[in-house]
Amino acid sequence: CVESVLNQSYKEIQVILVDDGSKDQSLSLCKEFAKRDSRVLVTTKKNGGVSSARNCGIEKSRGKYIMFLDSDDWFEKNMIEN
Image 1: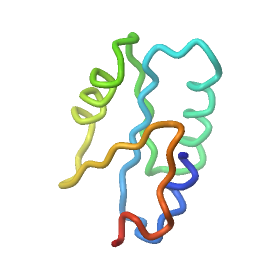
Image 2: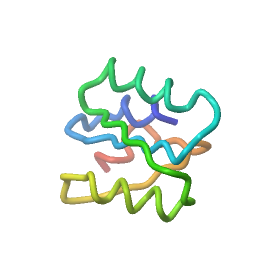
Image 3: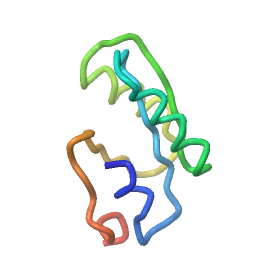
Image 4: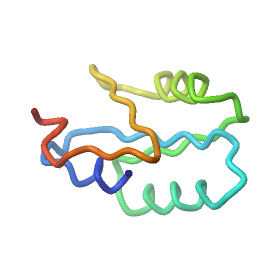
């Protein structure tokens, strides 16, 4: 999922990963992506569900446009550019 976003043909993006109180290794994975790519911002919050997590991401965003992607989805390589 995250790799599909980071590998986009359009590179001028901000990627916000919201850890919504996960109990697995998700936060560690998110932090690894942030270490490898300066476009990635990781934020954590108490579990509140998908809408709460998305609202948290919106608050952190700086871009003109916003897209959402769930962990079981992916973007085709030219999705953002097109």
